[in-house]
Amino acid sequence: MIEGGEEVKVRGKWSSKFNMSKNMSIAARDETRATATAIRKAYRPRTTNTSWLDNFSAASYAVNPQTNASTGARQTNCLVCWKSVGPGSYTHYCQLCPGVAHINCVGSAARDILWRCGSCVAEISIAEAGAAVTLDEMQTRRSQFFAARLLQSRMMRLVEVSR
Image 1 (tube, helix red, strand yellow):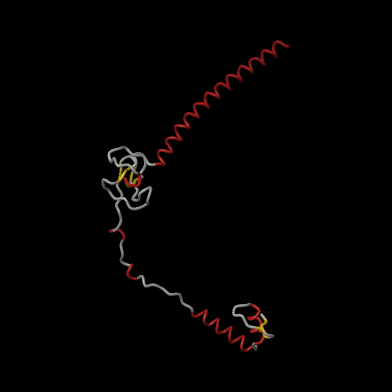
Image 2 (tube, one colour):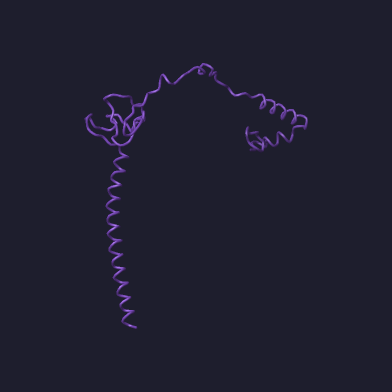
Protein backbone atom coordinates (compact mmCIF):
# COMPACT_ATOMS: atom_id res chain seq x y z
CA MET A 1 0.00 0.00 0.00
CA ILE A 2 1.19 3.47 -0.74
CA GLU A 3 0.38 6.24 1.69
CA GLY A 4 1.86 9.65 1.19
CA GLY A 5 4.30 8.43 -1.43
CA GLU A 6 5.86 5.73 0.81
CA GLU A 7 5.17 2.03 0.83
CA VAL A 8 3.81 0.81 4.14
CA LYS A 9 5.02 -2.63 5.15
CA VAL A 10 2.15 -4.94 6.05
CA ARG A 11 3.13 -7.85 8.27
CA GLY A 12 2.35 -11.21 6.70
CA LYS A 13 1.83 -9.86 3.20
CA TRP A 14 3.79 -11.86 0.65
CA SER A 15 5.09 -8.82 -1.21
CA SER A 16 6.59 -7.31 1.94
CA LYS A 17 8.20 -10.65 2.81
CA PHE A 18 9.61 -10.88 -0.71
CA ASN A 19 11.01 -7.34 -0.55
CA MET A 20 12.58 -8.01 2.85
CA SER A 21 14.22 -11.22 1.63
CA LYS A 22 15.37 -9.50 -1.59
CA ASN A 23 17.08 -6.75 0.36
CA MET A 24 18.84 -9.19 2.73
CA SER A 25 22.32 -10.39 2.02
CA ILE A 26 22.98 -14.04 1.27
CA ALA A 27 24.78 -14.50 4.60
CA ALA A 28 21.87 -12.98 6.53
CA ARG A 29 19.40 -15.26 4.67
CA ASP A 30 21.52 -18.32 5.47
CA GLU A 31 21.70 -17.28 9.12
CA THR A 32 17.90 -16.80 9.30
CA ARG A 33 17.35 -20.17 7.64
CA ALA A 34 19.80 -21.88 10.04
CA THR A 35 18.06 -20.30 13.06
CA ALA A 36 14.63 -21.45 11.86
CA THR A 37 15.95 -24.97 11.18
CA ALA A 38 17.55 -25.16 14.64
CA ILE A 39 14.27 -24.09 16.27
CA ARG A 40 12.35 -26.68 14.26
CA LYS A 41 14.82 -29.47 15.10
CA ALA A 42 14.89 -28.59 18.80
CA TYR A 43 11.10 -28.74 19.16
CA ARG A 44 9.84 -31.43 21.53
CA PRO A 45 6.11 -31.89 22.09
CA ARG A 46 4.79 -31.74 25.62
CA THR A 47 4.27 -35.21 27.07
CA THR A 48 2.29 -36.45 30.03
CA ASN A 49 3.70 -38.82 32.59
CA THR A 50 1.54 -41.96 32.43
CA SER A 51 3.72 -44.26 34.51
CA TRP A 52 1.05 -44.35 37.23
CA LEU A 53 -1.13 -46.38 34.82
CA ASP A 54 1.35 -49.26 34.56
CA ASN A 55 -0.17 -51.25 37.42
CA PHE A 56 -3.76 -50.23 36.72
CA SER A 57 -6.32 -53.01 36.25
CA ALA A 58 -9.74 -52.31 34.78
CA ALA A 59 -11.04 -55.68 35.92
CA SER A 60 -12.21 -54.26 39.25
CA TYR A 61 -14.29 -51.61 37.45
CA ALA A 62 -15.77 -53.84 34.75
CA VAL A 63 -19.41 -54.94 34.83
CA ASN A 64 -19.69 -58.68 34.53
CA PRO A 65 -22.26 -59.50 31.84
CA GLN A 66 -25.15 -61.75 32.74
CA THR A 67 -25.59 -64.96 30.84
CA ASN A 68 -28.77 -66.40 29.42
CA ALA A 69 -29.12 -70.03 28.36
CA SER A 70 -30.76 -69.18 25.02
CA THR A 71 -28.80 -66.09 23.94
CA GLY A 72 -25.45 -66.38 25.75
CA ALA A 73 -23.73 -63.43 27.42
CA ARG A 74 -25.77 -60.25 27.77
CA GLN A 75 -24.58 -56.87 26.59
CA THR A 76 -23.34 -54.49 29.27
CA ASN A 77 -24.65 -51.27 27.68
CA CYS A 78 -28.21 -50.05 27.17
CA LEU A 79 -29.41 -50.25 23.56
CA VAL A 80 -30.93 -46.74 23.77
CA CYS A 81 -28.60 -44.55 25.85
CA TRP A 82 -25.43 -46.73 25.79
CA LYS A 83 -24.88 -46.27 29.53
CA SER A 84 -23.79 -49.21 31.64
CA VAL A 85 -26.50 -51.67 32.63
CA GLY A 86 -26.00 -53.83 35.69
CA PRO A 87 -28.08 -56.70 36.93
CA GLY A 88 -31.20 -55.50 38.68
CA SER A 89 -34.89 -54.77 38.49
CA TYR A 90 -34.56 -51.60 36.38
CA THR A 91 -33.60 -53.36 33.16
CA HIS A 92 -35.37 -55.13 30.33
CA TYR A 93 -33.76 -58.17 28.73
CA CYS A 94 -34.65 -59.03 25.13
CA GLN A 95 -36.19 -62.49 24.73
CA LEU A 96 -34.40 -63.24 21.48
CA CYS A 97 -31.00 -61.53 21.55
CA PRO A 98 -28.46 -60.44 24.18
CA GLY A 99 -29.75 -56.85 24.14
CA VAL A 100 -30.61 -55.02 27.37
CA ALA A 101 -32.17 -51.62 28.06
CA HIS A 102 -33.12 -49.45 31.02
CA ILE A 103 -36.85 -49.43 31.74
CA ASN A 104 -36.83 -45.61 31.62
CA CYS A 105 -35.18 -45.62 28.19
CA VAL A 106 -37.74 -48.05 26.74
CA GLY A 107 -40.65 -46.27 28.35
CA SER A 108 -42.48 -49.20 29.93
CA ALA A 109 -43.02 -49.54 33.64
CA ALA A 110 -44.03 -53.20 33.81
CA ARG A 111 -41.06 -55.38 34.72
CA ASP A 112 -42.66 -58.80 34.24
CA ILE A 113 -43.59 -58.36 30.58
CA LEU A 114 -41.73 -60.25 27.87
CA TRP A 115 -39.75 -57.58 26.05
CA ARG A 116 -38.20 -57.62 22.58
CA CYS A 117 -35.81 -54.99 21.32
CA GLY A 118 -36.59 -52.89 18.25
CA SER A 119 -34.24 -54.77 15.93
CA CYS A 120 -35.76 -58.15 16.85
CA VAL A 121 -39.30 -56.82 16.33
CA ALA A 122 -38.25 -55.42 12.93
CA GLU A 123 -36.68 -58.75 11.92
CA ILE A 124 -39.82 -60.64 12.92
CA SER A 125 -42.09 -58.30 10.94
CA ILE A 126 -39.80 -58.53 7.90
CA ALA A 127 -39.80 -62.33 8.17
CA GLU A 128 -43.60 -62.44 8.42
CA ALA A 129 -43.97 -60.11 5.44
CA GLY A 130 -41.38 -62.15 3.56
CA ALA A 131 -43.25 -65.39 4.30
CA ALA A 132 -46.45 -63.91 2.84
CA VAL A 133 -44.57 -62.72 -0.23
CA THR A 134 -42.88 -66.10 -0.60
CA LEU A 135 -46.24 -67.91 -0.43
CA ASP A 136 -47.67 -65.54 -3.05
CA GLU A 137 -44.61 -66.09 -5.27
CA MET A 138 -44.97 -69.87 -4.95
CA GLN A 139 -48.64 -69.70 -5.98
CA THR A 140 -47.76 -67.44 -8.92
CA ARG A 141 -45.00 -69.82 -10.07
CA ARG A 142 -47.37 -72.80 -9.80
CA SER A 143 -50.06 -71.10 -11.86
CA GLN A 144 -47.46 -69.99 -14.43
CA PHE A 145 -46.09 -73.55 -14.63
CA PHE A 146 -49.52 -75.04 -15.33
CA ALA A 147 -50.31 -72.28 -17.83
CA ALA A 148 -47.03 -73.05 -19.65
CA ARG A 149 -47.84 -76.81 -19.64
CA LEU A 150 -51.31 -76.11 -21.05
CA LEU A 151 -49.84 -73.88 -23.75
CA GLN A 152 -47.21 -76.51 -24.57
CA SER A 153 -49.81 -79.28 -24.88
CA ARG A 154 -51.99 -77.14 -27.14
CA MET A 155 -49.00 -76.34 -29.36
CA MET A 156 -48.11 -80.06 -29.55
CA ARG A 157 -51.70 -80.90 -30.50
CA LEU A 158 -51.70 -78.18 -33.16
CA VAL A 159 -48.47 -79.56 -34.62
CA GLU A 160 -49.90 -83.11 -34.64
CA VAL A 161 -53.14 -82.00 -36.32
CA SER A 162 -51.36 -79.95 -38.97
CA ARG A 163 -49.20 -82.90 -40.12
